[in-house]
Length: 228
Image 1 (cartoon, rainbow, N blue to C red):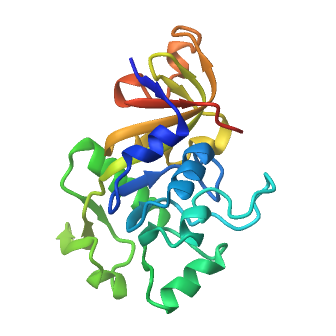
Image 2 (cartoon, rainbow, N blue to C red; image 1 turned 120 degrees about the vertical axis):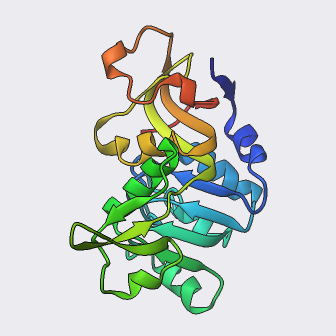
């Protein structure tokens, strides 16, 4: 059974220099309460693995929506993402040398995380062959299979995965609403510690078994009181 904690307790678990995966797409599916607590705590030198850096002025009216809070506070030393164009502070910090950014195609990022969670040695993809990506740190080698050239990309893992679920039961089983699912399920498999933020908490059994997307056996802690 997952242990229930507060956003502040979740933030307290994450030490300086930790690597964290954060589910979401443009802030949709980010665990906003946990991220707000982590921003308030001010933990620095984080490696952030997520689809993007979210954006200022999100739909909830907050300045610096979701993971954008961490970028704005300069708590992130390295960002591994698929696109960052909606958050101009990423480019500013890249240019002044305070933020290292590793851009990976979206499908490749998802597969690298899945490989990390599944214990696989890497991902073979033709995406990036013949480009500067061949020399990137996440590319292990160039491999030829049946006459076609691929990049062997390393699996991705993290110290923590911070997830957001619409409905989570008392055993930590998660159901995601709509497209908030995005990166959350694969990230749940690829981190040492998984902390999930719930919009709604229900008793075990109230989520039909076939609707469980992330099983509670993967979830260590649940934060109650998220927001859609």
